[in-house]
Length: 145
Image (cartoon, helix red, strand yellow):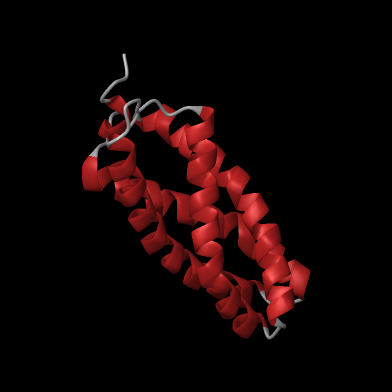
């Protein structure tokens, strides 16, 4: 099944976030001694923020990608994609995490660094599997043979 355009971006972003909520909420609840509903609420808030960030970041990344001489999605390009996404998102979530979990900014930063490490691997794996399942976006097909 080939997905392109806005439909691709919506399916990609929503499936990414739903799976992330399912994986992260029990971990955060256990780590901070919070209820699953508290941790899941934080996860949903951060996921909504991530949903918009994901769509915006992927849009910008694919615009950049389409202007490159070689549009092949190499390992290097996938690593750059994952690092860029997580670095930008990390700047957005520390204050929200500190407030929601009633923890210091330092603890929120440490928590988010740990989660960013997890999500870098998750982002890489998810995007690879998504491309394998739904095909590459047009931006990566320009020079592909």
